[in-house]
Picture 1: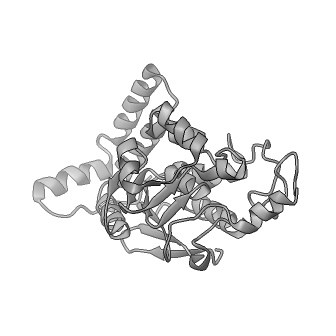
Picture 2: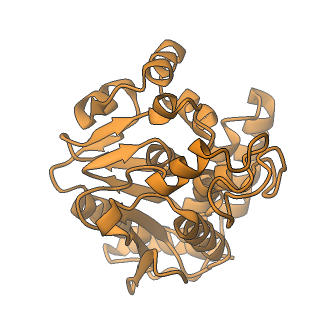
Length: 279
C-alpha cells in the first residue's frame, strides 16, 4: 500500500486507516487518491474485517485537493475533460468515463466506502474541506470534534462537488441546506454539522470514540452486520416493495445460520459470542 495511508489491524477485525500526509493536512494529491481507492478495494474482499475507522494524522482529517492541483488548473491543464488536472493517477482521467460501476475514479474515492461490506466510521477533526468532506460523507458514520471546520468548498475554486458529494449530501441534509452550502462554500463547525445531519455525533476525542464503536460492532455477528449494510445501501435506491423483499431474503438467510444460533446461545449463556467468519 501507498505511504499515504497507515494501516492498523486489530485482532478483532477492526481496521484503522489513517491518512498520513500530516505535513499537508492530508490534502488529496494523486497518490492519496490512489491509496484511498486501493484501501477500499482491498477491504471489499477481506472476510476478516469487521469494521473500519478512517481518520487523519496531525492537525486535520483532510484539507481537500492540494494546492499543486489547483495550480495545474490555473495553468489550463486538462481543459475540457479534467484529464491531467491531478497529474495522473486515479483522478487524472476523463471525468465522464465510468471506471468504477456508476462512478468515475474521483467519485469512487468516496463511494468505495459504501461498497466495503462492513460499517465504515470516519473520525473527523481539524478540517474537512471539499474532497476531504466528501470522503467523510462516504462513511456510514461520522464522529466529529465540535470545533472541526467543514466546507463544501469547491465554489471557492469555481467548481462543483464532484467526488459523489451530490449523492451523499442529499441523503443527509435538506435540499435547501445542501444548496446554501454548495453555493456559498462557507465554513461551518462540527456543531452545525450535527444540526444539519452531516455529523452522526460529536466527540472531543473522535478517534477514540470511533475505535470504541468499531470494537463494539466487531463483537456482533458479522453475517448480520453485512446484511444490515446491504439493506441500508439498498434503501437509498430501491422502492418499498423491493426493499421489503430484500429484508425478507436477508432475514431468511440469517435465521438458523451458525452465527445467528451462536448469537442466541451466547446471550442465553451470558458470555461473549464466538462467531465464524462471514459466509
